[in-house]
Image (cartoon, rainbow, N blue to C red; front, side):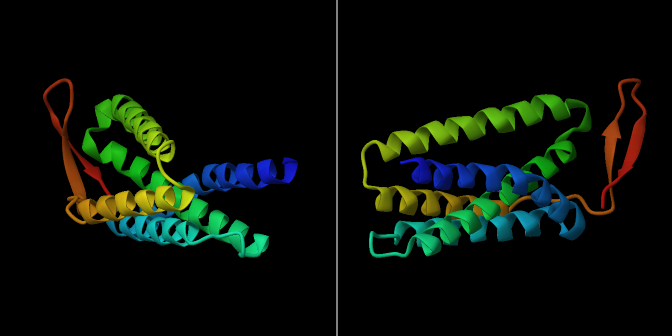
Length: 161
């Protein structure tokens, strides 16, 4: 049981460590493209996890979990990289809402898990992520610079890379 706990904790550890990489990748290669790729990788990972059976070698199952966790954490970093682009003055409020709705999603998926098998659970997550990846294709990412109206009424152009 201790070994199972360590393997389970490895998902969370990789997820936490990969979130900053998602922000970095997003800043370097573009937010929308990075988010779609990270979500696609997470969806494929959860699909692979839905195929895990008792016949799988433990090393392959753990590798699938870690790769999936990397893409999921990177996708979270990509999402948070978009937050300041919405309205810079409200970054804290928007980041709080992003985090809160992420937690609501987690509770919803755990509720689904209480009614289905692990295989169906991972497949459900994969389908949800595919939907999010398609929705991400419709995001408008600012190019070059964006305008922000300051509290004194002046307009400031903010360089966006």
